[in-house]
Amino acid sequence: MKFVAPALTALALALAAPAQAEHHEPAAEATAEFPLTPQGAADWVAMVEKDLFDFSVEASKVYWINATYITEDTDALAAKVGAEGTEKSVKYALEAARYAKVEGLDPEVARKLDKLRTGIVLPAPTTAGAAAELATIATSLGSQYGKGKGTLDGKPVSGSDIEAEMGNLELTPAQYAEMWTSWHDNVGGPMKGEYVRMVEIANQGARELGFADVGAMWRSNYDMSPEEFAAAKEQLWEDVKPLYMALHTYVRWKLNEKYGDAVQPKTGPISADLLGNMWAQEWGNIYPLVAPAGAGDIGYDLTALIEAKGLSEKDMVKVGEGFFSSLGFDPLPETFWTRSQFVKPADREVVCHASAWDLDNKDDIRIKMCIKRNGDDFVVIHHELGHNYYQRAYQAQDYLHLEGANDGFHEAIGDMIALSITPEYLVQIGMLAREDVPGADKDIGLLLRQAMDKVAFLPFSHLVDKWRWGVFDGSIAPAEYNTAWTDLRTQYQGIIPPVARPADAFDPGAKYHIPGNTPYTRYFLARILQFQFYKAACDAAGWKGPLHRCSFYGNKDVGAKLNAMLEMGASKPWPDALEAFTGSREMSGEAMIEYFAPLMKWLEEQNKGKPQGW
Image 1 (tube, rainbow, N blue to C red):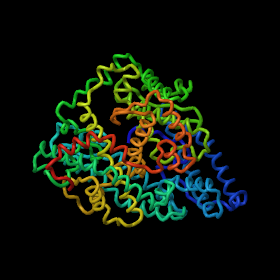
Image 2: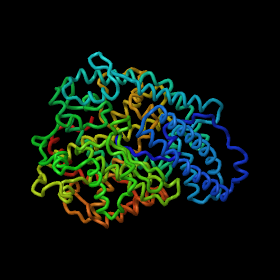
Image 3: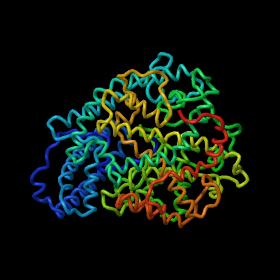
Image 4: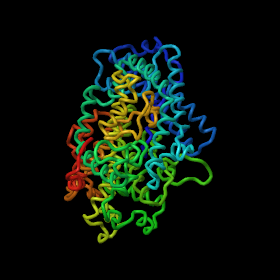
């Protein structure tokens, strides 16, 4: 996903990679200094937090230099720091598992021990050679994906290029099918044997840390039992499913009109290769095929407004800062302006992927972008600053609480701010004339375009980890890996592969986050939470009118409520943080349904007489 802000903590450094060194039982001396008692556990956690805090500050500086000045030397420094962070995380996770068994623990200490235990995505067991084998497999899977190629017209095409071509509306269904099939065959297929072995090893490691399997360990990060969280996540999907079903029906009909019954029938699932995206996870690329008549002209162009105002790249960031200042947040520190990367330097290689950074766990916050003076980057700036203000708000918390209330919160805050760039907001900041605000007749086109990405993404982001949870707990056996993946995609997304898949295929491996071992639930939660946060802000501002047109710019009451949630970081269970801002202790899809209500009404009219479902 785009615009992920790096959580530059020692724990996060180990999230995507298993240990590079052998694991051993914690030394006996550790428990001599910190006995297996409630007080000993508390003292041990305090020691660990200080060590990780100090390490993270140094590591963050190294990573910043590497991202903004890419050389062989900075690559080597980053690799060294990464290995150190992994070793610390592995060591402390194993020790935390021992202290977690102590009876009578202070509840906060127990939560911190859980954070330490679940800080590694792929835990290796202490068995001799296991960590090295797991590291080798993880590296191999990542390398295979990075080198992967599909074909177009029989010619090899690399990953980023083939992704772009899947959204090229000038191509034919046969070309889409070729790209989809070749990518899944060439990239996913060869990984399966190593992936099966990786699951075996990681599950052994999870059991040593006190979890039933790796999936249960991942689900233990949400202040409820793994079973309760799985049920809550399924309910969130049920909340928004009707909206997705209506969108699916409409898009299927439009694709049938475009390609005919032989390519896309009027009933049944949609062919996965026709939706403009290799994984059919976001459908925005095919919006021109489904757009209602007259939807293209919305009355203004954000890029043109930026040019008309003569805004420089830094001016665009200043506008973003002004949004937060209007809510009552303090201005960004001077160091933000002198240390951030706003434009791509002319003299060196850098990582241009937009991200928000907190280098000292206090107030050395920065963004790293290669800003272009266009509407897309104007929105991205607001999103990234949402991360920065969240980071600064929780700076007073203990080290292990220096993160979002759960892993969906950080992205959701950034996305909520991005949703707030409405025509009303542009009028308020003097970028758009009141008479140029688009009328309600343009709303359907705007909402449909948003839904093609935000709504279409929901079932895919839900099923990725649902599949992995089944793989980790054994309910999906290796022989059924691909069949189960295809079945889940049909069940939730209503899509099918463009061609029959062989029994030994491994289509999940063709999605980066599977070989990369990146948990995906955070993206599903963020997609839901952003609307819940947005509605809470609009309600607090007393907004009257359609939710999708709301602006809470300039409302200090909203800012105060938002800060009350942000400053908590992860110090309390996420329902406490959610309640502080929204008044509810449950994540809900109701706000998303309200936001898209005008579109839902329109879709139902368009879908009259058309079969729904598959």
